[in-house]
Length: 82
Length: 82
Image (cartoon, rainbow over all chains, first blue to last red; front, top):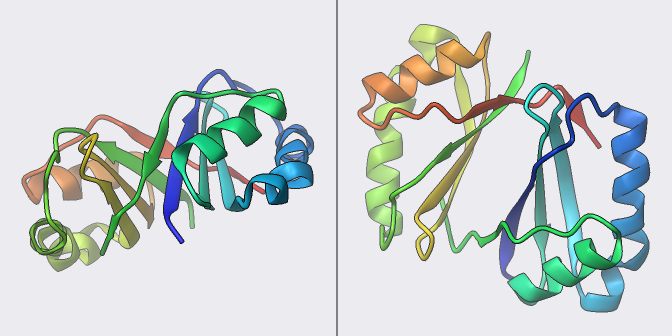
């Protein structure tokens, strides 16, 4: 199953509970697209969020994030890992 | 121990063995700064590399990457994880 990293901007000052709540919206619907989010990490100073997932395609990951209310165009297929 | 994500651009078309060789230069010296790289993922289409690490500071991660020959300013402290 392909692996993806996606990046979100603008989460400056967001707390752990706020991130968990936002990410729960992804988790609630991820199975509908065959996506599974493994991790979500936040740097609240820069506002960057990184999500690691598996799924059938980049577009599937984008659709889940869009429907969950935090769309991003920055989704990268991680076809190489060392 | 703080966790970090760093991002590199420009690795378009790089192969797994080339990434492994480049990353080995990080691994060879990481202990000198108390850094440990856990994963390095590449999207060869966009040329983005994401490295997940632990270490004492963002600057320590930057110094290892700079000495290894692939400096980046894009290092983010992942103080929140869900």
